[in-house]
Length: 158
Image (cartoon, rainbow, N blue to C red; front, side, top):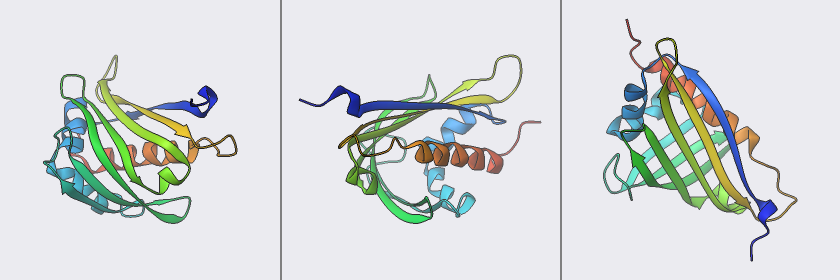
């Protein structure tokens, strides 16, 4: 039986200029592969491994830079909800699973109250292999930075 203290969740909100629909469309369309060009200091590769962009069950192969090191991940799209502008990726292979039994990340874009733009809610849910493994705060920060970088490369509303 898993020790409950090893199962955890980290969350953050990132304010962006793009409307929720535009940000979500970037994440679920073939344009996601362009993230390696807009954030090449963080993402080195984003390849469709199996399935179709934006479909549940699709597998995406990533190479990214985290804490100064090149890492890899293979993610499956577990949840895709266009009405809520929500996508969840589950990690099925890669460096993060060297320290975690399970790991998933969700991004949900919501309209910013009182103005244009959006708030992107980031959630990491994971189970560490043991208590000696730190919580992945730097990975959450990387995801927040990527969100801002993607937003900076999207056409801005007038």
